[in-house]
Length: 364
Image 1 (tube, one colour):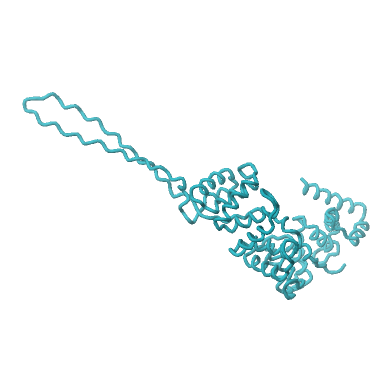
Image 2: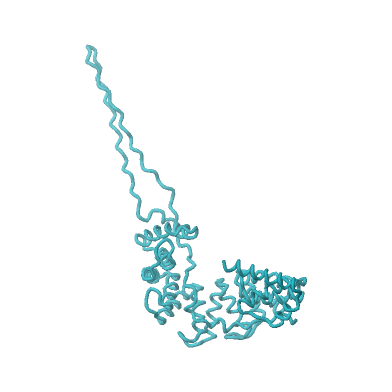
């Protein structure tokens, strides 16, 4: 068998941006409560004893001390707990999955403090039915308020709502303006999705050079999807000069962030020694990881190396198990079909049973 074949993936990036996830990776804004101040205790005035009956040598009765005036209990502000700029109760509750708590806190904060981050959070909770019934119209309303207040994540989320038509009619022109504004404010998801629109060439005129510039912005901000996409640009010379070394560095970065597509491409590069020193054992380990994450391409490539014994000991039963799994997902391979047919009946049954078990566990 030949060394592992790389895959051509620029075409796959030309998917409509409306399929991109509209979920917002919310950045913590600001806020936990200072230590609560207990209410001032009311002093209870002591009873003043009655003076005894007068005697001949009577001393004047002692004047009793006046009772202490009770200190009024301070009333909490509606925004109490949101003054600390370093911590955020709303985001903390959201991260822990306490969505109803996050909703209640965000409502208070958005209403009384006009906090745009809280407004974006409310949009997120309504859009994804977290702690509250799903309501796209209300989600759009809160995203709009956050966007108007200058929140870049609110702008991005509102743009995705307008691209998909959830909560309002589709408005691609407004979506593009929102993505551009959000990207200008440093939101990598907005830059990435705007780049996809320039690749797609339907909402915007196709401009691969501009797309590459936006992908670079998002990749530099740490977006693994953008790193992977820009790597394919450098690999194939799309919108940028062809540069295999840059492509592989970007694939490595995206792979370290658990981007499955990047894991497959980086593993193939390491296996073949393309743009990086050859390391077949590390490549096989990375292919195993991606195969277990249900990448059919990784499953196919792993099957090939296990059957041929390249970079790893031969294990035809395990290899052909992955071939059957990949073929079920639409990634067939005639050479591996021949290898499966050449197995003994006992080993073929083992491979088929292992594949059925994997597919069954995956579909649960």
